[in-house]
Image 1 (cartoon, helix red, strand yellow):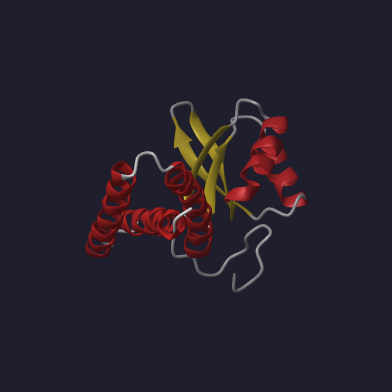
Image 2 (cartoon, rainbow, N blue to C red):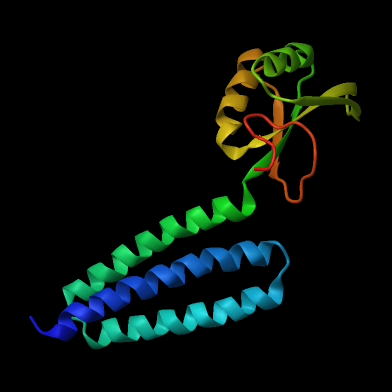
Length: 176
């Protein structure tokens, strides 16, 4: 096996790992409104990606290059998820609307460590109580199950939060 047959797959692996990882970063920055930086990152992402793909096409018989591309893509996805977790903290806000069981839901959530803020609103059928819970996205399944056990017809709306300060969050230590 020639030295080039060993080195190129390694280069391809690391290049694609970087491309996919910075692609995740680019998407996060784009969603946050940092357009210029995401455009610059996108330029390098596309340039590196096309150079690697061109090399693989020139050497289409090199199965190691193709495997290195796939492995690099998978590694880049993993690193991208780590970057996403570190940057965005994945903190969610969920509004819960239950016409009949809002007090029971509020009590169960508080008993299980969730911070609950409640307020009143007006819907098409009159006044209703709205519960708001802020937690990490990893706790959403637990939250959803607890709410559905109390009221399978409850209405839940969840969205990602940015820029938090103060307050009580389930399963979160101060400074994290």
